[in-house]
Amino acid sequence: MTGAFVALLALPGRLRPRPGEAIASETPPESVAPVDPSASCAVVEQGTMVHLFDTSSLAGGPYYVNDHTLVQGPDGTWHLFGIFHTEPMGADTEVELIHAIAAEHNPAKWEAGSFEAAPEPYRIALRANRSYGETHAWAPHVVPWDGRYMMVYQGGGADDYHASIRLAESDDLYRWTRVGHVPLFEDFCEARDPMLVRRGGAWALYYSRCDSITRKLSGVAYRLSPDLVHWGEARMALTNDQAPATSNAAYAESPFVFERNGMFWMSVTAYPVAWDATLLYRSSVPSAFPNAPYTRLRAHAAEWVFGNHGEVWLTHAGPGQSGVWMSPLEGI
Image (tube, rainbow, N blue to C red; front, side):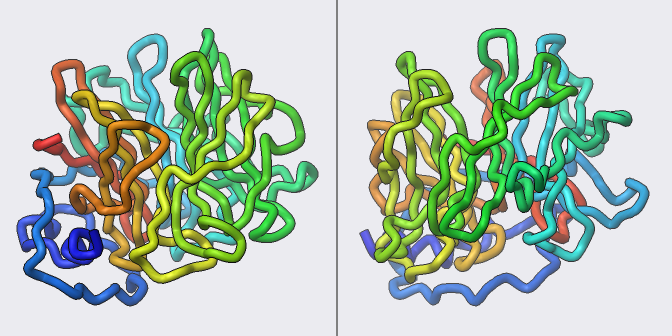
């Protein structure tokens, strides 16, 4: 399995950004050198990126959008929520979640500028509330449920070993209210980037975390809940024991889990490999993923969008990107 992982660090040139695509402007962390460049891995064809949400024209900028989420409203419009901050990157001062809207119902017809910032007072969906112990607002994920919309996000905490996962709700995707003043739970290793899934009559919440306090291997944990209030203990869905240990699960950021063609898939951003390195894993079950990646894609903080006719798209954002981009995929 080691060969499969390291091969992804040096995929062929066809996976490099094409002209017109987003290219990270800040210097990425030092890459991990490939050990066996001749090892093979699966390749998924990734098309040209389209600049869906361009923040360059917003007053007061330049701004970036980082970890984000997309959800379709009851009238067919699409809503985007994500970390919002002025350049350059300032993770410790990311306290706002931007709200943007696309009137076009069909993602296959999205083009440059399809998303525009929501009108005031709805442009900022949520701000960190320090009176509740929130030190920032990171990585929202929104899902529809029972006539409402539920947003999970990371609200910071007293330190990296008390990172809080929190919940807000909305009836219309414009007005958001926190569900309680306390976190759903706290966890260590800067636990963050939650993703909420309804499956089998219960909720599963995936998020980035180290394997343990003493074994700081990057991974993705999950917890189960019957009601979004009571949460079970954390279990690891993925542990990457082929990458160096880190204090913040840097090789498993922004997890996204979905089911397609009878298999479960999980993507993560591994920014020490490269700022736009997204690794895709595959499993027959949603609770345990082998740590040999299926393929590597070009994206940071990737979200997945699925069309009505089998289409698949992958989003991309982050510092230096002037908003959010999307590219089509084939081969999954």
